[in-house]
Amino acid sequence: MLRDLFSIGNDKISDIDLGKIPEHVAIIMDGNGRWAKARGKARTFGHQVGAETLKTIVKVASCVGVKVITAYAFSTENWKRPSSEVDFLMDLLGRYLTNEIEEFNKNGVQLRFIGSRKGLPTWILRKMDYAVAVTERNTGIILNLAINYGGRNEILHAAKTIAAEVAAGQLNVDNIDTNIFEEHLYTKGLPVPDLLIRPGGDMRISNFLLWQIAYTEIWTTDIYWPDFTQEHFIEAIKAYQCRERRFGGL
Ligand code: IPE
Ligand code: IPE
Ligand code: MG
Image: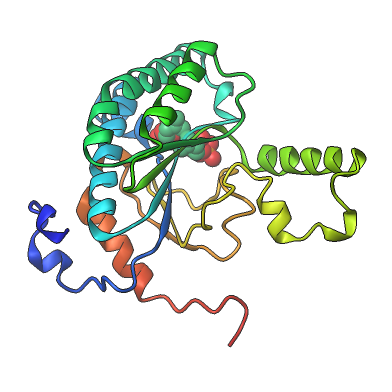
């Protein structure tokens, strides 16, 4: 496993505790636009380079034993951006899904998606469904992409589905607990994130995984996502390993 970390100096990983790797790491891939602007380039160039960064991070995460990466790629609020940027992001996602499938399969990556299908173009939905279908038997890391995702939207969606089941007599109100609720979230079946990474310098959640991050450790950096390297990822894991998680206890 660690032999795959050929490009990370031993000094960087030697003090990582392989017995204490976060099972699920969530990432708010932020700062693409500002990264590009600082280089006198169009924001879209930042998105393009950011998509490459994700590949690198999935690889290193898989090497150290992370089981799930949930990456925030497009929020329910990102539709507010100029249509040219939105169109570019959809095209980029489409190309990513087409071009990376072979590599994902080679590395055993399972692709999943969270978010609302409503509002996404049919051609993207088709590519998403295909990507899930052809990677679902892979046994390696799960790459869970949040597309047209919003935490509030997800909670509303769960509440409505539960209400409909109650109305249909399939579910008793008294039986609704956190487990039942979680089964109605887009992240059904996945563990909650242990670590949330936000590059780009902002210290906010931006409507990401609102239910799931109740006790998640948060690590932020000023580095913009396109500049985020495997060394930064390792740094975040090390910081996580120094945290004392109390979950409200002592
Ligand atoms: C994150 O980068 C990618 C998406 C939100 C799609 P941004 O596009 O938000 O980049 P900044 O934050 O404006 O620099
Ligand atoms: C969060 O970044 C969404 C994604 C990374 C996809 P934003 O750039 O949309 O968040 P705000 O607007 O800074 O809160
Ligand atoms: Mg941003």
